[in-house]
Amino acid sequence: MFEEIRKRAISVALKVFETMFYIPLELQEEGMPCLPTPSVYRAEIGFRGVRSGKMRLYVPSDLAKTMALNFMGLEEEEVTESQAMDVTGEVCNMVCGNLFSELDKKTVWDLTMPQTLPVSYEEMVAGDPQAEVMVDFNAEGYAIKLNMQIEN
Image 1 (cartoon, rainbow, N blue to C red):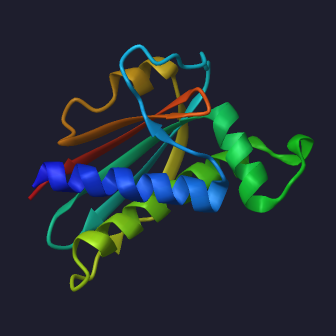
Image 2: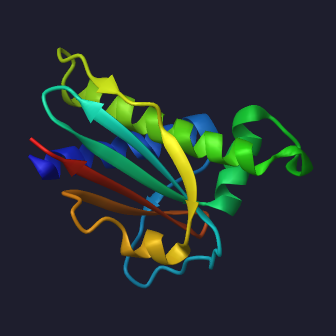
């Protein structure tokens, strides 16, 4: 079951990042270089339906600013930290919503409002040890991590 969720999460994330933010993702391979980043945003969204749990998405702040530029059509100097954090929450919402609509078209899924906060790079690397689904991506040299905890 978790492997099917992981495969679908990969597919959905690739599609959302490419079509909504013009950012191509690829799976992070061992030894693939990543740009060092001092600041990371962690977006979290809860879900309830046939299964309950939470999804966390870790995005480096520099990449989140690029995503805000692409999504909102702003100039680089116009993007605020608040907008970059909002975009990180919105991409988490898009991935989670699309994932569950693909997995089960009949169930009504209740999603919480995404919450985004700055975290350390070390927290992103450590991830969520309780997560049943973990995916590491590389986007233009930046590491992105998607984790899901599924309760039932």
